[in-house]
Length: 174
Picture (cartoon, rainbow, N blue to C red):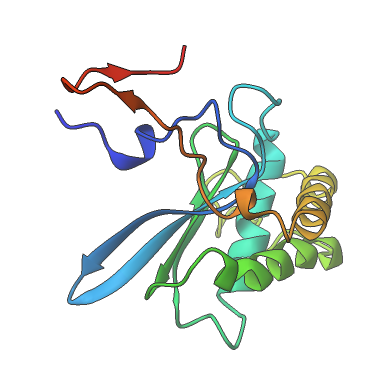
């Protein structure tokens, strides 16, 4: 089986940020999947499950109600590794072009008085929410984005240069 694209990124080099994970043609139109990474994989503690669930609800609600973006949003959901989220949008924009949207989404969490859709009729695990911790993680990430907005490294996956000999041998990082 072929390795899927998101598993081929060197997770030892990923930092928090906004990255293009993949671009696909679906139904004749382009869609872009963004990696919204809050934590450094395998180095930082992951996001608390209940807080992640709350962030999913609050930010999905924000994105699907934003007048400028709601028609572009296809999906917002957590990564299984609990280090970030995937955002899928119609079209093709650079990571920098969605910076303000992502920043606004995370800043909106602070204003939440309750988690939208956190009732038995709306949610498959309505008791598993933590609004206080969701606000903490959202504020931490928003502050990080603001203080690193000029850092190109938060918009592009790290690339590792691999030396190749004249006869085609590859030398990988150790």
